[in-house]
Image 1: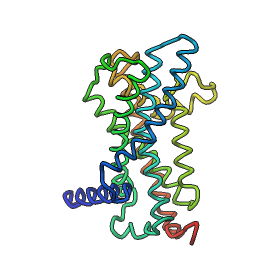
Image 2 (image 1 turned 60 degrees about the vertical axis):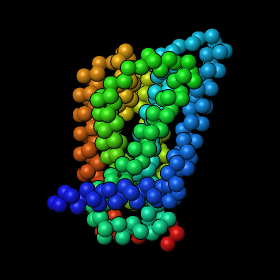
Image 3 (image 1 turned 120 degrees about the horizontal axis):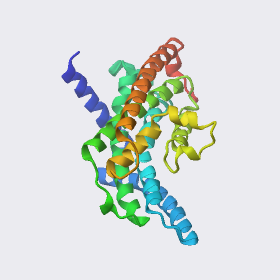
Image 4 (image 1 turned 180 degrees about the vertical axis):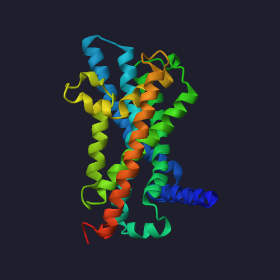
Amino acid sequence: MDVENYLRKIYAIMWFSWQELSNWTKPHIFIAYLMVRPIFGLLLYAYIYIAFAVTSGLVDPQRAFYLITGIAFYNFIGNGIYGVVWIIHEEREHYNILKYTYISFPKLRDYLLARSIVYYIIGIGLSIVVLLIGLPLVGYNPLLLKPNVPLLIFIFLIGFVWSAFLSIVMSGSSLFSSEFGPLISEAFGGLLFLLGNVLFPITSLPEWLQPAAYALPMMDWMELARFSINPAYPIDPVNTTIILVIKTLVYVIIGIGFFALADKLARDRGLLETSLYH
């Protein structure tokens, strides 16, 4: 394999993904637009916490930290997952170019992963902005944080790997449906939000639902993400990291195998041209 040529293709795909996502507008205008949704979402949850704290008289900095970090880091995962699955729907339904993608980049899985990088980079920016605005908003002193930069970089990298390959599974499923692709991504995003230690610990869930939460990497990833910016956060970082790495490897293997099968079946059945409107 010509590595230099392959990397050049990935760069071109990322550039195209950014241009298409931003509708070829000026970067600073598009970045301002991107900030609107997560900030207003943050304000909603912050208001709920503040209203509870004022009415009950119970101000708990640790709960505030848990809430804001959950919302912040979820932006990284949620933005990436929705972006990857939306690509299939957009290129097949909106532009009718999915079948032509194979001509320029025959490996659809790698094409999706290359395009997803832009969504995850945007997600990192959203996470940082929500942290910087949200923590002071709920009265948590940001000076208490002591970010572990190498661990934080690792968190974003491994988060990209497991969630991108989970998205690959969903993308493979959406190849068989011209209508429900976006709904699939919304459903999985909501599932991770519910089961991923985002707003509350999974021990608060019904017992019959907890095994599903333990099977997902989201729980361990979110806990390690909190620890990466606050070493006083009470977890066992070594054990959590080992579990997260094992789960990530499992999801990578599942993603590769499932998408290869789905891709072959979709091509054999001519589903790459299947559209809701054609």
